[in-house]
Length: 433
Image 1 (cartoon, rainbow, N blue to C red):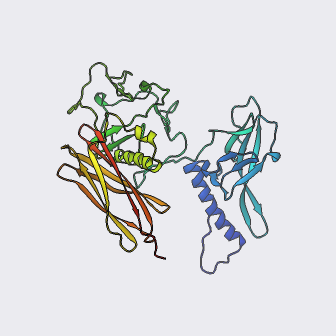
Image 2 (image 1 turned 180 degrees about the vertical axis):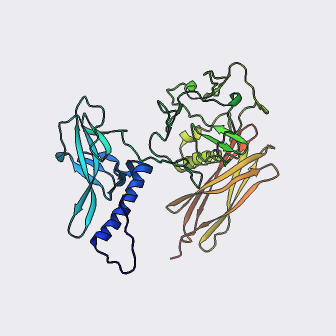
Image 3 (image 1 turned 135 degrees about the vertical axis):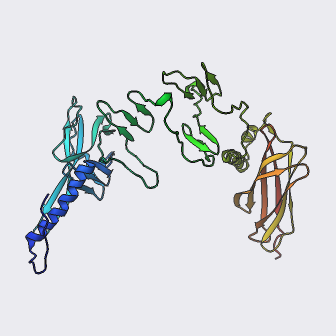
């Protein structure tokens, strides 16, 4: 490393002293980058092929000498400036300095290497960073995925203060040893080369799946997560042309057998001896009123039905799982006041069963403006306990026309669904001439 100047009072500062100071700082930073992190693309610099040419996105890279390659704005290379008859093109980013009498400007240049039809390996120009390969396709060049290298982290330990380590590039994580990678984690799979061993055939220490949280608001197929005292694993719903057994959750032994497997069709298979520590509950999976996805699905389906007034959507809810005779809905208008129309919405039940998780959605049309609002969620209705809601509708004028359509959904014992609907129409008096 370059020696650094030692300053003292009265020492003369000339160009040589200041240049030595700059060389010391620059070399120190470059030494750190090339030894602790290595070379590669640090951020951005993705290639995009269009009809006009190829574009290099803004970003930062570090070359083998530890020099920073900064691209502050997109670099566009027209096809007319690139070889048009090659089997492929490799794009590289290299460091370049422009010196004048008063300054040295650091910049970059793009190097294009022609790839022959039989070439598979990437030939590295000196101190350049590989950005990607363009392969000739039927309609011109296309970007070939993979091949880009990224800087490393050389350390005995890597700590994340917020207990989050975000890894974006594929593979997400690799643990190397003698020979092939011992552990590889990608966005689609985790593979281990060799034997994953633990004392007494068990994993040493607890296997953690994160802190418990509320149920997700939408489906999360092929994800593990904890909700309360439950550990959930969601299976993706197969396409209409797929077989349910293709989507399954299985517990495998070290010999590859699956003593427990559950597929998306609801079939559970137990092979051999299955030992479970703790209670085993065998029951039908009923409706979970605390799952926000149930309420969201019911509300969104009925809001769509009310908005489009489609008989085809209503037919989806006719059948043994839905009972339209349990709930009744009445909407009674009150006296219109200055700029407002109050009305009372009452939900009652005709039977003795308790209706839980009652949700009320109203679509209101005032003159030509329509809006939809959720008036209540998570309520209960019984024979001795009606649900009463007092609602106000703003009136632009005393002669406004108002139409309200309300839809009510609830859950009956046995996971059946109760629904009802009601309407209200109001026409203000015409203005006095």
